[in-house]
Length: 222
Ligand code: B1M
Image 1: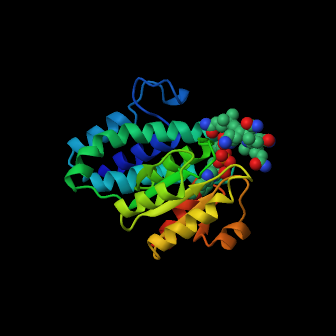
Image 2 (image 1 turned 90 degrees about the vertical axis):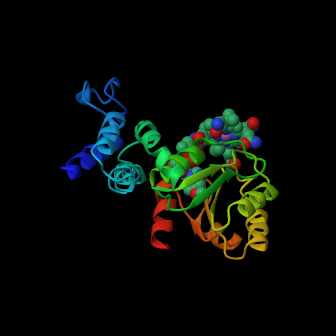
Image 3 (image 1 turned 60 degrees about the vertical axis):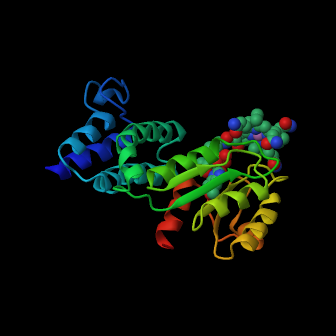
């Protein structure tokens, strides 16, 4: 019974069905969405971690992979993230109490000199959907600010985004300073002008061309 409910929630996330009042997607008009169904699951006694792992992460994971394969697009990812946020609002108290657990902490920012944040924000959404606590440092983030965040969050993983050929070079300094602060730190880099070759050259642990790849790298290297 609870398996059906979890599948329904996962479908709502994947299709971007936020709540009963939301008109999108049209074929689900009037039906309960991620909001009502998550409340119902908690009221039925489904453990918050099951809702996170067997519904939210599945739904966001599905849409993330479809995005990587160019089968769905930015608006679909945004609607899925909106539905996920509606569900997450019900789970928030359980994260605070420790009853539900994040996979880890993911610190992310767009590197120094760079103001582009649309892609970075999509990475944030997918990482949250994958069960990570995301600390978004914003845009134009100096290496020092990344280091400060890493010291405040021991064991975190860092994501760096850059959209300009003139700012991607700032990633190298950031990676170097992060390694000096914490030799075990894992750093993932991404952004339109980057390549695997560049990521290798600057000593990043991983390069991903899309948000889901960053999440999948962490799942594989856990
Ligand atoms: Co700018 N801009 N821009 N811009 N801008 C580009 C990037 C550019 C390619 C346009 C062009 O000339 N054709 C060009 C860069 C050229 C180059 O470097 N070779 C450019 C330029 C030159 C500039 C300015 C210098 C323009 C000027 O002022 N003369 C200036 C720089 C400002 C600065 O940063 N200091 C500038 C400014 C701006 C705006 C502020 C107007 C605006 C940004 C608004 C914002 O982000 N809030 C803007 C925009 C919107 C663009 C374009 C049109 C779109 C970028 C975007 O959001 N794409 C872009 C041209 C283009 O791409 N068509 C362009 C959509 C987004 C979903 O994709 O960010 O690639 P993307 O993210 C992807 C992946 O890369 C990946 O996942 C995302 C989803 O798949 N990804 C990661 C990203 N980060 C990741 C991290 C990961 C993993 C994956 O792990 C950590």
